[in-house]
Image 1 (cartoon, rainbow, N blue to C red):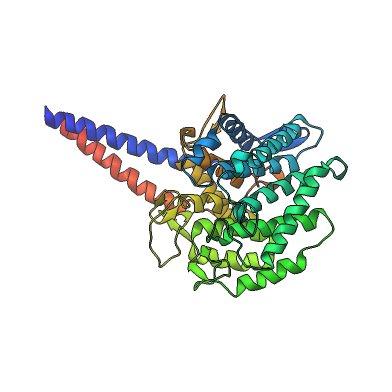
Image 2: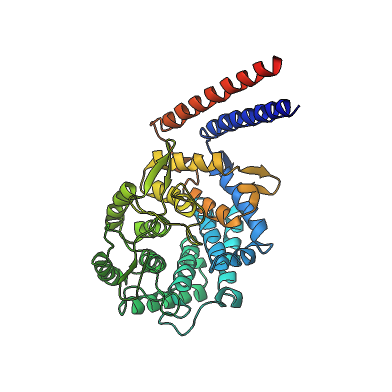
Length: 409
């Protein structure tokens, strides 16, 4: 009786493993859906993701994320706003969808600028509230201005943006990496600040190019032993911890806007040291090849050396720097292993239990905003995983046959 139950159990297990492999291979052929809105073919899957996030954030998901991440509230609202900014930039400003995007961006900025948004940050630092808060707040505010017509911009927003940019410019003239918290500096935070200065010079009369280039010159003389911008350093640029995949993925997104030439150099190195493969599928390592460590709150779960945060944001990096093959492979890997579900409340990953993942996936997916920006490749990147899958399915089927024969005896 026990032997019979064991055979049934292992038979069911093998059946589900085989079905799971077939499901994953099917999802690796994912293609985004596009819908016509205001004469624009907009990524429908992205809109569904944003609808889920809208409902979640308006029901205090950012407060819940703050319980798990030191900057969960601000991060949630800032990255959410940036995704809506990509939508607004791609659609007619007379459409209801544009109005919705604009309202959500404003709602998120108001949350960032609220007492709750500022609560954990220190006003006494060189940059009031620190580099992390100032960078993200200023950059998101600049993105709001970038989707608006010049004659419709709120003068209060314009003046606030320019004031914050002046504060950033003053801070980086004195230290390479202004503090985010007392005695703590993270280069990635300051890159967001510099992206805000770069955005200013695209929106208004150029003012900060000399400051940006002078700052980059200092950054280039304070790289880590692998040639990357470090994960952590003191305010004067002294290395404290070498680059990690999560920080480098974030930096490359903003470096693209600050200095695309330096960005390309860092990206090529990033592909060499951080892009890796497991069973033929790509991901971004949390720690560079040749180094081992464990994950933390910044990295999210690290599985077989692959960082979850690094990989999700790495999708956006691959799209920005035109590595479409890697971008599609990572995108479809998220579709296969993120178990997305689309319902009446929108599209969510991992059953919607971890909104921070959904927020960053939406931002990374937002570059594929319409059919004109749809990712494409002629490379057959699935071959290695399909061969592993074929081997696995063959073994599972043979085991099922063996179990079935024994049950019949």
